[in-house]
Length: 566
Ligand SMILES: *Cc1c(COP(=O)(O)O)cnc(C)c1O
Image (tube, rainbow, N blue to C red; front, side, top):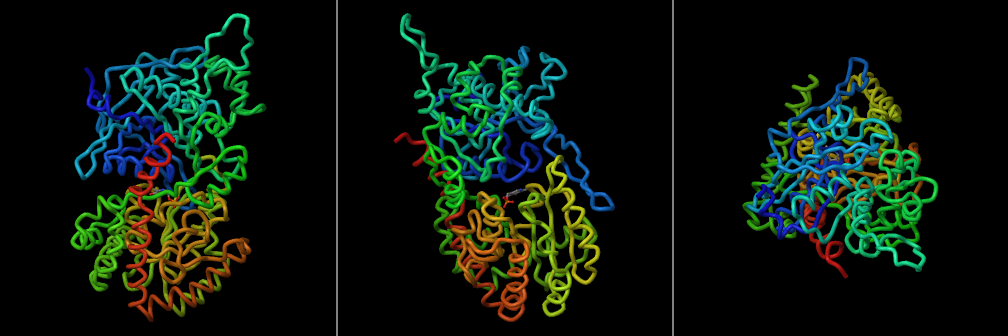
């Protein structure tokens, strides 16, 4: 009957996500949340887990970043054609938005594991002739527009997604809500579980909440209250109508505003944070609910440079299926590991030269800071004391490469990008480059070709972070504030280095001081004077971090702790 037929009987877990990083040419993601979903899908396929993924088509992507001569970020649409990678499915469903029926067409992308198994990803698209012009664009651009646009997108994802799965014949036992964006799916499920009124008996609640809870699990990624999607009930009512009565919705999603995380928590049988520290933070934010921990992981095969991959593959042939086998990667001969690393580094250096014309050398250490350019990540902490930076560079020359986008409306973040460009230009003696348009392809080059992976957010605001894991798979050493996953992966002088102490002074001044001191007295001297120890740390970081912080471990844990009913 249709292209999803082969999946209908087995694929009973539906993973709903606003964004997913499938491949660089498909602009269906914006950042870490999407890459995490992509790595989850890749490992689900490797492990033959019965998942179907549901996301938006995002034909115009999220934001292609250009930088002008003065260091200003210019925001562009980032179009791609679903036609080139996915197949249209001959079915449509409709969701009522502002009283109009908005039609949703799913595209099927089949993600194939290198082990042969494949899983379906459904991309929801409102760009169909049946819709009015204003509705065709709902699914076009990820995280764009205002709160009202966001409600529409989330309604298409959540309510539309449930209807699409149903229309296609999927029989879903468990819905995984990847972040609060997906929480409207529970409204579609509630609608399927109306309790028929019994004459004469008062109805406290019109829906079988318990039945819906039994079907949902929720992963939160946000450590601050303000970061959770929340909407004005008047907007919700105007846009969604009475998909569920507003008085009933308020009981589930908060009295004053509709909080998507609260809605998700009230309608999920299981909820988790994405690192131990983050789960503790989320637990304090939502004391009435039990927040479990499943620490994130990244997909080793995707993020490990082919040169490193070949060394490891020869040593432990089954490691791809059993990432625990990466524990044996410390048997890779140091000189081979160094040669593979230098190859990745030369590729990155060539890329930097091509992209922005800055010359770098494979003989000096290369420090990378690549992540979303936003206030709490403190991308300019590095420049807190440029005099000190210059002095350190005189003793131990080093190089810096940076990359990252700001959200189009994050004017603080954009200011930081401009500031970083001005600082880089002023620091004439230190080779520095900012590479535009940080995406999946650029990330792969940076996480393999750098020597040091720098991260200095304000704790506890980094829920997990995954780029440091990708770096570690390549023997790139993490140098990071103790927050998110690094609290679990960090062993000082073994897997990398801490900036500051856990619970210590987290001011920018204190962290900058710690960073400069350790850079000058520990990190750079080891690179120049104790290369053997440096390479030993590269081996330690591949084995100890690779064997644990991979998405195969993460998805096995979702399978046995979240998806399975206890
Ligand atoms: C892995 C990845 C991220 C997330 O990493 P963080 O450590 O959370 O910054 C973001 N963007 C891209 C392109 C990535 O590959």
